Length: 448
Ligand SMILES: *[C@@H]1O[C@H](CO)[C@@H](O)[C@H](O)[C@H]1NC(C)=O
Ligand SMILES: *[C@@H]1O[C@H](CO)[C@@H](O)[C@H](O)[C@H]1NC(C)=O
Ligand SMILES: *[C@@H]1O[C@H](CO)[C@@H](O)[C@H](O)[C@H]1NC(C)=O
Ligand SMILES: *[C@@H]1O[C@H](CO)[C@@H](O)[C@H](O)[C@H]1NC(C)=O
Ligand SMILES: *[C@@H]1O[C@H](CO)[C@@H](O)[C@H](O)[C@H]1NC(C)=O
Ligand SMILES: *[C@@H]1O[C@H](CO)[C@@H](O)[C@H](O)[C@H]1NC(C)=O
Ligand SMILES: *[C@@H]1O[C@H](CO)[C@@H](O)[C@H](O)[C@H]1NC(C)=O
Ligand SMILES: *[C@@H]1O[C@H](CO)[C@@H](O)[C@H](O)[C@H]1NC(C)=O
Image 1 (tube, rainbow, N blue to C red):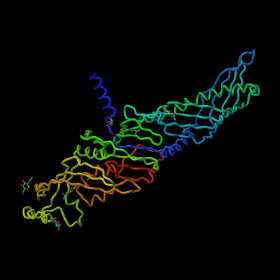
Image 2 (cartoon, helix red, strand yellow):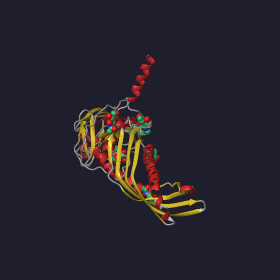
Image 3 (cartoon, protein in one colour):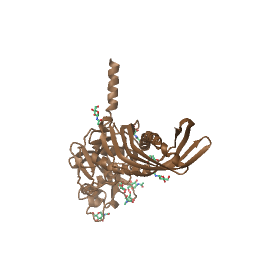
Image 4 (cartoon, rainbow, N blue to C red):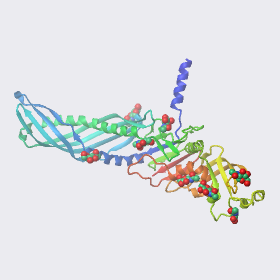
């Protein structure tokens, strides 16, 4: 009894183990947009298709039979009707169908009967072709999205065939026979072709990187945390969304919390990101010892009323100029704890606990320690609806020049400012995207 309970618990902890920190939601609007691109792609593929040779025998009464081969049959024209594509929750996948497709083909024919050989060319037209394909989406062991064919059906309404050259008039009586045979042959070859294309797609998905270096310091893991979730109107992919230090590759001591991205059907897709992504970046930089910096007077703008020298600092600490008159100073600032972000409605809050060590630079270039300050700060950054996803770093500057340089450079500017290079999207560009930070620790970025 007990072992089976433990086994079930282990299974549960494996299946419900990881919450996604990034969720990508494709809406029906996005699916329909993708369909147009997909249709062009299918048209391009079809225009290149060459069918394998079709051969067989046809009986000529008591004289036996004639062997024939139709070869080099390639598509000369396709009239591709608008296909329909829909989310198909029954198989956690997609269902696409196309009907009323017409195809013109041309090729060569050869026959032989004993030692008599003949040959010529042929034109072939297929009418009212219908194809229906159902695919299943899943997740492989390495966290890639996977796609596989569940069902494919194909019917061809009618075939017209015309032979040229040789003694082709001899064939005319046999055209009805050929028609049925060729129709059957072609019909049986379309679904394997469709399945081939799905396998090609699957191969592409398998070699796609789910981990990307964002810069020299941080790498982003976008592997799927669970199976895709599909309902009648959307597809939801949960991605790990963890940024980690390339050098230390340490796992942070906190986990992603679950969150939901509100459905936005007027957008093609939404991307929701939880604070775990920001905090994992923060942890990555912290564990790599990057959250520290030295500030000296040459980094302070010349026009600033305050300078990093003992005279100037005397207005805050009167003893300084008395003990160390007329010396330049430097500050070393570092994070004592991992700076943690929390996402609030329309704002990003950062808790920063750091230490500032001040030094006087002696004439012989040695640094004499002056004082140490422990800093506990909360910063709130307001976000705004904007055309591009970007938190204006200038507004951080107003709050604190030091901390900006220190902790935010990587955690925020890399993620939100410079941006993350997403997997290459052919001819895709974000338009009218908005950034919105939402209640209870979640946020979303959307594309229209
Ligand atoms: C079609 O075939 C040509 C020549 O073989 C090739 O250059 C082209 O890339 C092919 N197009 C597609 C979509 O496969
Ligand atoms: C999906 O499956 C349910 C039951 O398993 C069935 O009733 C329904 O007709 C199916 N839907 C489609 C579109 O096939
Ligand atoms: C995947 O990542 C590796 C190493 O980071 C890189 O060499 C390779 O080119 C990437 N592959 C693709 C398809 O981007
Ligand atoms: C990404 O995360 C997955 C799931 O946690 C893990 O199996 C995989 O090893 C990670 N990839 C990298 C490159 O760290
Ligand atoms: C200030 O720091 C920069 C960069 O670390 C350095 O190049 C410069 O010489 C320093 N200036 C002084 C006055 O120490
Ligand atoms: C110290 O800073 C003040 C401005 O705050 C400046 O006038 C003065 O020249 C500086 N002294 C040194 C030694 O750099
Ligand atoms: C620099 O000067 C200070 C005080 O003038 C002295 O204590 C220190 O030993 C000197 N350091 C070096 C490396 O000469
Ligand atoms: C902050 O990031 C910017 C751009 O990524 C870089 O040019 C700059 O050197 C960084 N500053 C520090 C102090 O790391």
